[in-house]
Amino acid sequence: MSKDNPGDKNAKDTHYATLRRAHRDAKRERGEIPTPVQDKRSKRSAAPDWKAPQLAPDQVLLYGIHTVRAALDNPDRKITKLSVTQNALVRLETGPVEELGFPVEIVTPQDLDKILGPDAIHQGAMLETAPLPVRRLSALNDSPLILVLDQVTDPHNVGAIMRSAVAFNAGALITTQRHSPTESGVMAKSASGALEMIPYIQITNLADALEELHKLGFVSIGLDSEGPAPLEQTLSGTKIALVLGAEGKGLRQKTRQTVNALARLDMPGAIKSLNVSNAAAIAMYAARGHLAKA
Image 1 (cartoon, rainbow, N blue to C red):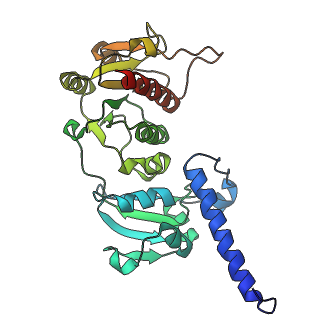
Image 2 (spheres, helix red, strand yellow; image 1 turned 90 degrees about the vertical axis):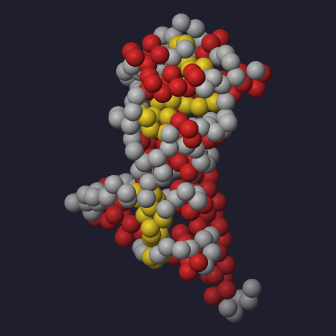
Image 3 (cartoon, helix red, strand yellow; image 1 turned 180 degrees about the vertical axis):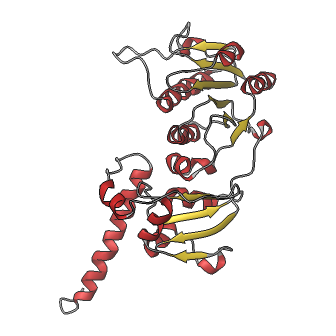
């Protein structure tokens, strides 16, 4: 690098800054470092009258580098349009945009703020897409572990559970059609790409679905803070369906009557309950330990 050519130094500094930012963002996506708390007041003051756009039933807006990249890699995704900043486009590594098969619009971060709102951490990337195809219990793969949610309504929790389910190689995440979140940008962002990697199956009647799982050879275990025995002592069989209820109310009575067994997570500390996404991760870890020995 020549001292007489300061432009070379600026280009090099910009290059390394981009690499550092990409490395830092990748660690945040993996949960290795926390996402910084943004000053939401300044963003809200810039758009005090923001209202969420009315989306068509066949329209979903996904955002965030990791979420969008995973959706682009999913052959089941029907993509309508990619809106992206120039920097985010480089980070997505899409290749020539003219070969993508759908429109790509270069935008500013402020353009995406106007659509997604002041709280969305979009990282300069937004994908307009159709929802994933509806999946039924027949979509279960050969995994001996699946997760069932009984009216867990928070999309952040469902997204976090989905991410853990992929990490533990669960075969599906099953929820009810009512009182459960539909596919959305918030859930997809919380799942950090996992929405594209695991069947998200919504059924009309949970008790009927559990009975069908029993016929497929699954032992269903409902997590209950007052379960008669610890989860580790309740695990049995070679195919397990873990069933978790919403925070506060827990499993519904009909669900409690339908599962094969109820179990608790023993916690020796002063706090005896966990966020449902944390409980799901611990339960899947225990189940995987049992299945490895079965």
